[in-house]
Length: 200
Image (cartoon, rainbow, N blue to C red):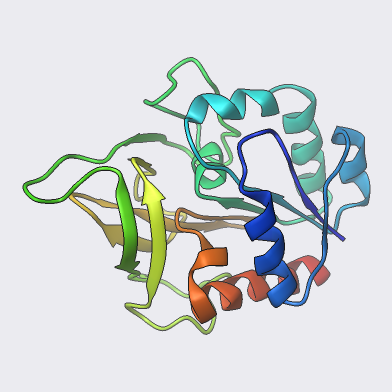
């Protein structure tokens, strides 16, 4: 079973529906110890990075133990930003630190508005297990004001005033800035790919 962590900042209902369409049921762990039985972990999230402070301590420790035993982790939107060391949105809150770098606010450029809301295209610079079957320039659905930097772990980029990481992949750590559960067939393909990784 794949664990969907509820830390008070996620759109859990739509994420569950997306995974159901991808052929997987999720369970919501009551506490960090429940992650010991998880085949994979999903950290969703919308809103301010400060909300991820609820993951500090036991949850973070349990997630790291799960990664050490080979369970994959998927961060969605705010959950992807949490994979990094932190964010300028809440400087005192620490991220998981699985990927080096800090998230920053998208620039207000000309007629482009922030937050970045709506469909935008992906550019995949390298092969990725998470994006397998997703065509170059596929459109996916975003809603965010802060973004992650482009790093060696970047599996796809997007541009809205500046280039940012739209998806990341580092071993068993995966993340998407967009909402796959709202991104039509391409999003379901991505969720199905994560399910396949979790099932081994």
